[in-house]
Image (cartoon, rainbow, N blue to C red; front, side, top):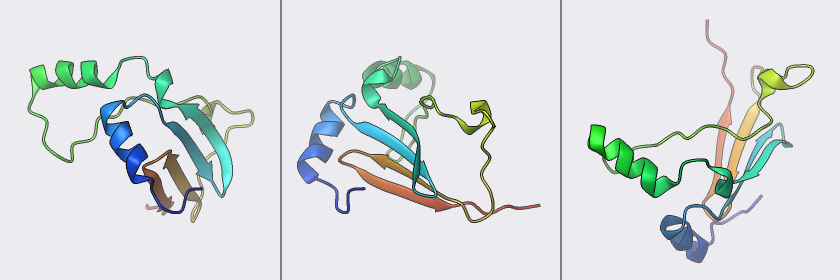
Length: 104
């Protein structure tokens, strides 16, 4: 995993958001590995479409789906457990790291 984001790649990603590798790790094992070029609907078109329905604000997140490798469809299925660490790494942007906390 990349320790520090590459600022040049960050700028390029913002201009051309279909160039980055995206990996999802659970307990340091790669479960999903894809590229944003696999997105069906391009980001500029998504923004245009969504902007017709409501006003997007800085910090808004547009969720586009998930690459193959989803735990529910694995054989056997793979479910997150208490204290599992999930890391989502996007090339050039960095890593989002969360610990799984079960609630009742």
